[in-house]
Amino acid sequence: MKNYEIAAMSRKELLEKIDELENRLADINFHKAIEPPQNPMVFRNSKRDIARMKTRLRQMELQESSNA
Image 1 (cartoon, one colour):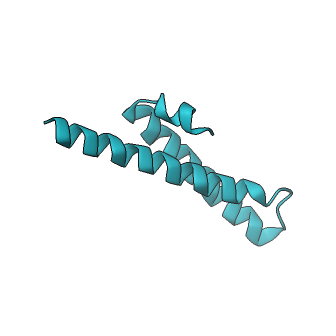
Image 2 (cartoon, rainbow, N blue to C red):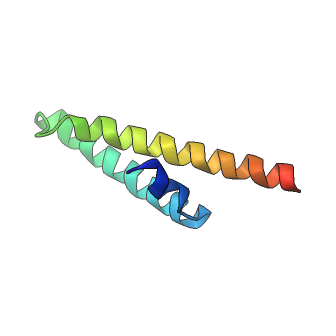
Image 3 (cartoon, rainbow, N blue to C red):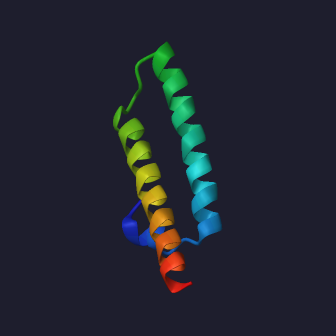
């Protein structure tokens, strides 16, 4: 997911997407224990997407607190 896509999301959308990606990451970890993954980059990309979204949430929080 690209940064401009994340920037266009609302807080609610970000939280839902983070939850979805964390569930997907748990599934990947589970399947990784059973057999090697087809594409190991999926794990890394999911973690990075989650980090980007959490960073955007934090930016939104800081922006709201500075405007208040």
